[in-house]
Image (cartoon, rainbow, N blue to C red; front, side, top):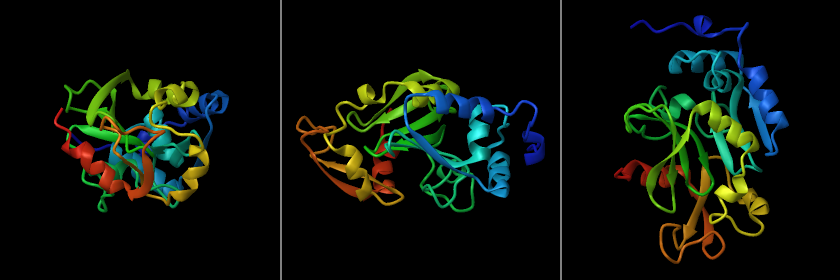
Length: 219
């Protein structure tokens, strides 16, 4: 099958970005992004073979990435100075990989607790649903959301409830401790009986360290 060119994947008439940006603007959760450089965005479309008609293509073309809920979640995009890695470099599609790719999954986002969101492209029957690697269970769990539904959840979902057991008082201020490409390691870890967002101590750790647990997950 021939790869489509970036120009063929760009659909200006049915570009999903205006709709997606309106969704994020109107949602209750904070978000920021840095626009992708045009050439970087076009390159991302070509590597991913997605159209700007889709939310995934719109994110890949328009943004370096997106930071949601005071920095708790990083959504991957075309890549750039503002985020660690890109949709291509996280998923084995670029010459300079950010991490080791996970076969059958396309990582689309990560959080500061060491959790990862990925599209099932074959690992779980290729459902096309978003799975979450839960750092308190060390397992991939289906969210039963498509990528577009996942974006709606990022915009207006109850993220505080979802992350209730991972968070602690003053977490927003503690985000300043993290450099690009870092997440928090919890001691005791979240997957232990003693570990919790409120009781465990936290220290910055390279995201590649946190990713190892997701790569080694058996399910």
